[in-house]
Amino acid sequence: MARAGRANAEIRRGLGRFSIALTLIAALCAYPVVNHARSANDKGKRSKLDRVLQDAALQGNGVKHRVIVRTRHDRLGAVEDRIEKHGNHVESQHTRLHSFTATVHGSDLRALEADEDIESVSLDAVITSHGDVTSEPQRALDDQNLLLSALGLSDTAYTGDKIGVAVIDSGLEESSDLSGGRSDRFYDFTTDGRAAHPYDDYGHGTHVATLIGGTGKDSEHDVEVVENGRRRNVKVAPYQGVAPKARIISLKVLDANGAGYTSSVLNALEFAVENRERLKIDVINLSLGHPIYESPDTDPLVRAVEDAVHAGIVVVTSAGNYGVNQLTGEVGYAGITSPGNAPSAISVGALDMHGTSDRSDDTMAKYSSRGPAWYSGLAKPDLVAPGHRLVAVGAYGGSLYGRYAERRVQGRSGDKRPRYLRLSGTSMASAVTSGVVALMLEANRDKYDAQLTPNAVKAILEYTALPLSNADALSQGAGGLNGSGAIQLAETIDPGRPVGEWWLTGPLNPWTFIDGQSFVWSQTVVWGNTVVWGTTLFQNQTAWAQTVVWGTTVVWGTTVVWGNTDLVWDNPYLWGQTVVWGTGYVGSTNGSTLGPTTVVWGNLSQ
Image 1: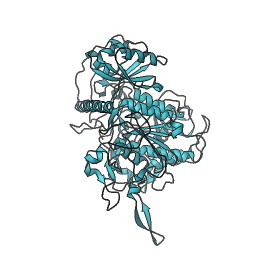
Image 2: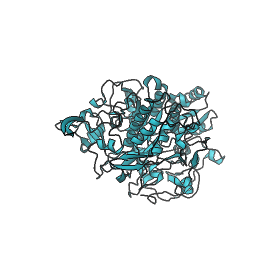
Image 3: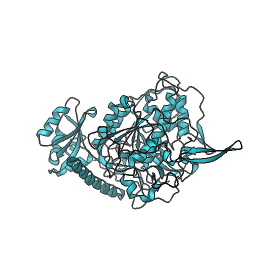
Image 4: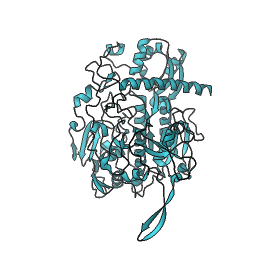
């Protein structure tokens, strides 16, 4: 208990530093860069330290830092031994990443960088959730059935049955909305990662989990309908989740303040991969993140996400809530957080539906992080989904429920204690997307023996997305989530067809009817920073294999039409070289490249 208390205190201190850093970043405009000397860079080599630790190494003092050390494949144990013999402490191992977490002295960082057995050293960064509970004047979706209607899912026969979704978040509080013998599970990675009795002392994880798979039972009530001249009562559940029969595997990594360590998320991701078959995990939802401190090639959180995708798990991440300057209200770019910058992840921004199911009035939520991703310059987010003022179960024991009484929503009239809570953020948008992915996987498995790969799922979501006319590609990605279209295309693809063959099993119309209107699909896939369009998705390609990292060079069939990269970038040079997040540049290798300093706030706002 004492150790847990010290850990929580450290997280609170780290969260304070995190919040201060974000405030400073939001206030940035053009400013000179200080050229700190770094020995590795002076020699023309990339530093093994991320940008935070590079600055700490300059101080060279005895201040302790929690770090994640990645070693050569066969040297993990040897490096751990040297670390401990030098008076530092190893906290945990991440064997799939050939890494471990340790607390080290600042004066030892240079020695770690010089160690030939070490590949990289990263800050064990404080992770926070991406739920935004600030009050906004727009109308709420007081009937969540409008959400399902807006996604084209009002009449879908799919429920997410037998699909397992691992929610890596703040935990799960039991309620009628997640009961019924579905084998929901709970593991606590803020302690030892063992199975435990479910709890959620923050409330964010419960909200995310029930947006994905809540039954809405605590909001059920009878409604009188007239059919063929006859009146009858039917039960409706306005706060039902997107995939009400999906199984939830809750992996707790965040504390009562909605904060935790990157290393806890790494432990949870490794657990999910190692226990994928036993727990039947198909999807991982990560509605959390931290600022990008290094290239995705070395970022341990990105590497863990890519490992999960490589293992065949669809990983859905939130893009972040850093899309607007808190001081000026201007829209800003390059606010994507880690692991939303993971190439193979499905990174999701947030839509504001303005309280209607009409998709023509959808706009980007101002807080939603825009692309590109820092360092890599990747076009992110991949798509956007409803995420503004959504209602799901509120955890009675969570600090969010206690703190925001005005956000509580009654499930049934006469309830003494409101069961639900209204939250906003890209966290909610990623949860809605995870629910749609569960429906897609169910629809495809019902018809075919082979299974859709994570890359194929991502391509389907992008291809069927509904572009917003009032937002650019770096804000919306491929467009708004289209649940009905994604399911329709998933039903039509036979993943068992050989590479190079047409895998559509029937006719396909690239549009969806929602709320009486016809909406045309994007019919594009953004592969890295290049737009692929035409009939690319209609045949099995090497790109859709789960072993291929999204965006890498692949051999395409002759039916592929490559789009111009200007469809993604308004100015490729601008986005590749001069967008600043913190003190580094999109496209640079380690954040130390000197050049023009441009923070882009508002000049591309819709």
